[in-house]
Length: 285
Image 1 (tube, helix red, strand yellow):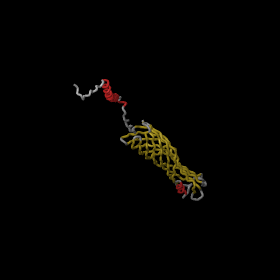
Image 2 (spheres, rainbow, N blue to C red; image 1 turned 45 degrees about the horizontal axis):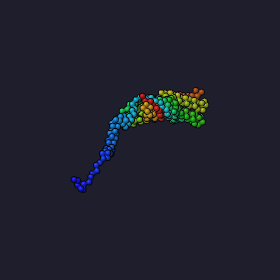
Image 3 (cartoon, one colour; image 1 turned 135 degrees about the horizontal axis):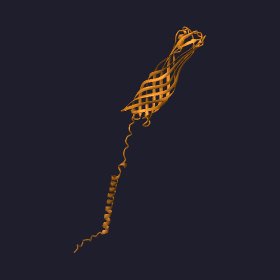
Image 4 (cartoon, rainbow, N blue to C red; image 1 turned 60 degrees about the horizontal axis):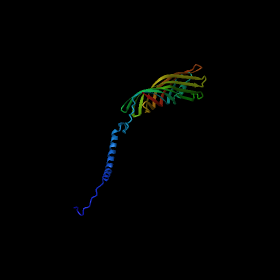
């Protein structure tokens, strides 16, 4: 016999229980499947598709040999000395007057161009090198003193001196500091050129006197300077350079003479200083 206050509990229909179970299980199953798929995708991804940090660019190395071309400008200056010996055309004190008038200095400039070749060796940031170059440098330094009179105060005379160069060449060790593709260096050693010297004299005497003294010489001197290079590519470099050079004296011997047989021995000399500024390109092997 049933309890009078007992209430009958309704029984759940099997389709309702199945629906509830499906509603709970579906999200869990979907989450599991999604996580598994993502894990499989990561495990199966090729290593070469993984993002990687680019390696740093290699530091440029200056070791090697090179050839190149250059061009620029050169300025030359000369100090001239003239001496006239006592003789029979110019009488005392005129030889001393002419000698003083032929002593002075002048400068001149022109373009230059040529080529260079050398080799470098780098250890750490230090770069040691040896370079030789040859430039065409046709330049004339001329000194003219036209407004003079001999000791009589009436007879005019003019004295002219000139020094011509044909080329500029050097052979120099170099030492520099490299900062990747930049190289700053100092340099210096021996320099070469050929100089042609001439001294001319003319006066308005009666009879007039004329004279010339000439000399030509291959000169050896010294040079110092500094420069900078930049590696445009692994093989092509740009360079800019300044050089100062000093050379030995060029001397000349001649005579001043007139049609009456008068003559005086004429001596002349000229030193030579150069300043060179040039830029160029090199091809490194």
